[in-house]
Length: 307
Image 1 (cartoon, rainbow, N blue to C red):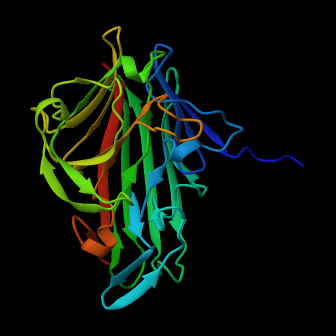
Image 2 (cartoon, helix red, strand yellow):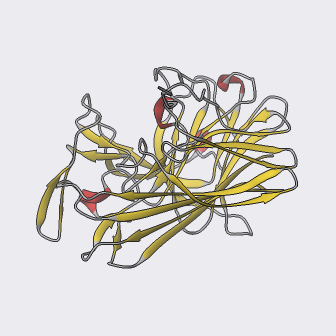
């Protein structure tokens, strides 16, 4: 019997110096490198992805308090997946299989792949969603587009995020700098659930790259800033002047950044740069939460490159 790899089938993409591998499980970015230099922390095909590496986070990103929420007058309970904080973490599709439904090829091999997962309704989330994730390589890097459609007869609560771990390119994270295009930080309680926001100043304002030596982060950032193309960026700058960079367009307006302190197999090996459509606990607070009506589609776009 052939035992499938924990990450599932592998979809290899190539364009010029860009190489990426997208895993079937979680529609995860398992590898992405430019000229052989890692932009994300790779993980082995035959291992479980550490700390949601590269996965799609839907129908909610981040934490949901006690796994409980009320929607249109009905209370729901989803499984608590982070017992030490009693939260439901990162949605329902980060560890499921996606089916390939489309792809394109170029002179160097496949340049794009579209993976699909049809979310099965459950008592805790009784809506049928179709999640289509398209990864494509070009001279600009790796572009990610997700279209989620409500196939059900009633409106569903919805949010989305992603969990790539940026690579320091062989350097130590403590020797790197971090740029985050945002002017406010989300304040949290002991369970890392939001309590408000505060403006950033001094070294905490990372719109100008700041050193990461001794800095531990597991925080969300809002009031994002954008460049002339409407993109907001996070850049992990290495000592040699190169940087692993991630952008999101106007379809999302929230960043989560994590240095991975104490997380097994990650522990400050890289920095999670997570574009999100909402912050933690949105199913309860309603903040930035999408009301996905029957038959409608919600779309987001982000990408990565080496700068």
